[in-house]
Image 1 (cartoon, helix red, strand yellow):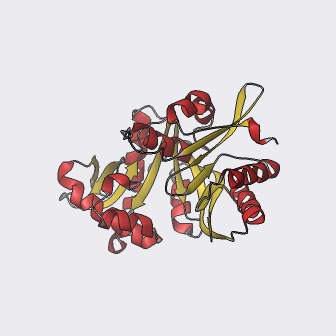
Image 2 (tube, helix red, strand yellow):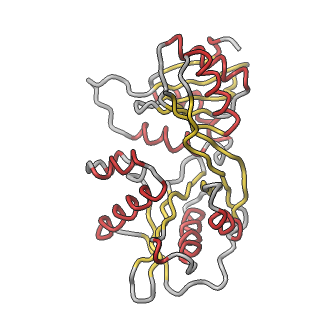
Amino acid sequence: MLPDEWHITQDVDDFLARAGDFLRSRPALHNTPLTDIEKLRIRTPDAHAPATAVFGSLESGGEVHAVFYLMSSGRLGLTPLSVEQTDALAAHLAVLGHSPANVIADHDTATAYADSWQRHTGAAPALFWRTHLYRLGTLTPPRPRPEGRGRLTGGRDREHVVRWCREFCVDVGEQSSVDLIDAGSWDDSRFGDRHFTFWETPDGNPVSMAAATSVIGGMVRIDPVYTPAHLRGRGYAGAVTVKASRAALAAGATDVVLFTDPDNPTSNALYRRLGYVHVADFAGYTFS
């Protein structure tokens, strides 16, 4: 695989003009690149600031076959690549002087890239993230449904939403998001552009929360779903997930997806009961 088959740019609009159709061709599998790149696109650029991300599209015969994007945070995102392609990309990025802090991709691609990056640079990889990707098939509401109702949050709910997102991040060990929230940088966190739904008891008390991205390329990702520990086991998470999933379908989504922790059999069983189907496994590695 020759390096010049990668078209590399720091212009997000140029990148999307070349690779947008490819990303939208498999919206479930490409859900993270779609949301990450859209977030970069809609930010108002500072004309005097240097470009903050690098984008690449692997092109052959006039078609795009894969993409990468390297964010200012150091996160490298990849769509599926062969072992040979990941090795060529790792070598090319090293020559260009790019140093990803971590990589996230489908399990096989992320693992292959981590091995290649260590071989080319000596940086040792460490697995920090494993997840299952699920896509909604036929939505199946839970029976029995808990009492109460779901509703979209509003401005008066902001403090509650921020607090619960922080609690979620503490639960799952997502320290970078905790730091952003504590610094008052909500809009820069991964939750800043989400739409939130509460499940409330009949007396109006919120007991569970689900967030969703906007529709991008026909895809909506439900993320996160959170119920405080003392309220779990009562069906609230299932009910709020169904409410958020229905809202995504009503907004025009053709692919509604979510990630789950492979080590949490309870949540995996719940989402399968609701009609979500396992699609792929993903992984993330940090580099020393």
